[in-house]
Length: 257
Image (cartoon, rainbow, N blue to C red; front, side):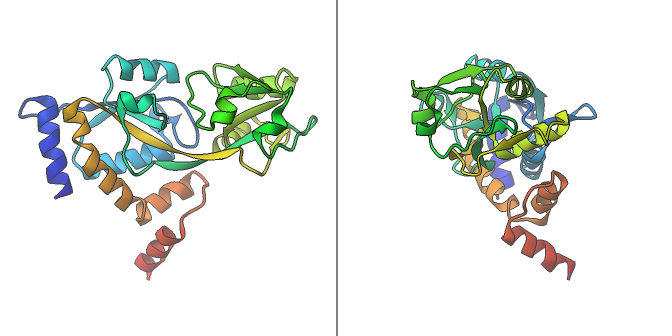
């Protein structure tokens, strides 16, 4: 039934008897999205593939700078923005499913040579924090605080480089993303993070508000919720060295019996 509803909605999207591919855009945010042998892979990219394939929906995905993805969505040239944080402003032009792609723990990384233990935004007084352009930091006290400096760098790699050079004091990012990036850069022993997340958030596959595309959301969120409880999703998490939910692990073990 879910696949049937999605197929009907997709026919309205195309306005014809053949299905065009939906256009999906995201940026490189490993281990959630990354480029591997010319293909967009990662936890959320692989999860999106499972869900849309199960629904019989074809799509094309590109890996681009985040601001370009946002601009494409704003200009109506995009159907899905993958791994978007929710904000009231974005909700004016995008439809957010009730089920997120992932839960994100936003932590502050520091150079081991210059340690900081940050438990709240209040502890940031006078410090310089590396951020990324176009990102929606949902903790208002961080996004609008004036007692510290937010400084953009074009990529997380650039932010980590600035951190090691002492050009910023801290870098804020998702914990898994920061650890994955540090390993790729070979500096995993040179940086650390405050164990207390500054805040937690969710990332979504945000859909265009065009009626025909938004009509796919109910089917998408139902199938996403189902897939996240399957052995296939557990295998994706293991592939990228992430924790596996207890329920998914139990289902995997039961299938092996």
